[in-house]
Length: 539
Image (cartoon, rainbow, N blue to C red; front, top):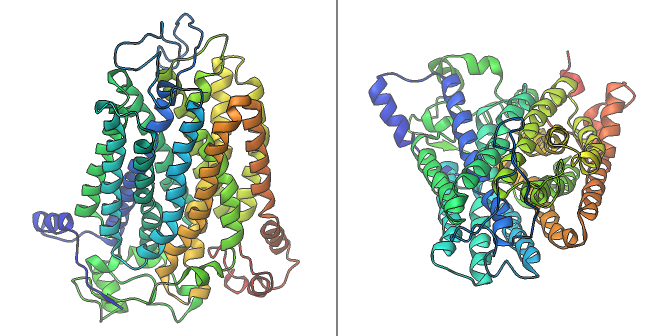
């Protein structure tokens, strides 16, 4: 299959202005930055619903006095909750302010995430077939439009449930284009060495997006909840324009050889080595390819199908693990601000705005957790052991947060950060390094075009759990929050157990008690990740 592409317009402009070309490493840094910003915008546009839940469906709370602790007025109770005429406090917003308001909010979440997870499987295959730059641009602009239209329901005084439901469903379909695309782009540019650490740092975009979205949505809440959607929607549209102008989704687009395919004759060298990445562009091109044109035309293998991708060792167990991991993570993502407004902390209740600000600390812990999980898995060369250990550690963390998080604000903040670290660590690891490892598995024989498909399978399956968790929370929370935390603890336990066979295989390999790794994979049909060196390649 011949794909004709060229450098992005912004890159062409920079070339003309500078009069010379960037190095390969410079392009890699630019790709890291652009994809980081892109997916941060995706996550920022998902946060408004969690911030405005308590505005759409308010419940009576106790009004306490305000005092600075420890960061001034950011994370404390505001003086009085009054209706300022914008519908911000007090009466709520029909149709979410009735007796079934909490359930309706849960249905809104599950509608978004169900469409997101179903769209993920299609988007993954399309991402391996179409130009990733254009595909990602369309997804970002479409997401921004429908997120903004949800917020316009405030200004248009729309009180019909189906309108908000449909807006969320269409937004979910556009959002599905994001993750397979950005992971595939990173996989196109980066080899496997230190992939866990690189992607652990890069995956901070999830938490940065959550934090940015929360702060942005909360900052304009006083002017009407519609602005909490319009601003993040506008942000992701601007991000989509930036991606169109500057993202080189493939090295071939700007004249570099693909790290895949050129070395497909050697299993051990199917991925571009760091040493190759350091070479000047001309040397790499001249030495390794003469058929690659400067305009970005190249020959690539056909995209793999879903069945073939599912047969890659390790895909199914990690996908099922992510189902429960995202069930836990997304329940916190969508319901933590609401939980904080309904829970007495240090003898008082926090306001809606304060709850949105406070919930960002969960994502601060998530940033540390993603980097730590990636670093540990690189050092141990054991993705499954790392992911399972974090999931098991999340269980006592969540239990302690529920039992002791209400004692004081300091205990709530400390336990929230720790919980975010262990909950988001494995989620970040599986959706980045593990997905990229399996998407470039040696069984593909150098065909890198499974990157988006494998990523979509793993994250799509996880997104079903992401839809189920917030949906069940909408029902369970009406009976009390203890039931919600019990659900989360059970989910974390199952996520860890699903990796048991892979964990045992890694332990046996580390202790030297198993056959060559390639034989085990063929017999068990499971592999932790393709980044784990084969025994014959170990020094």
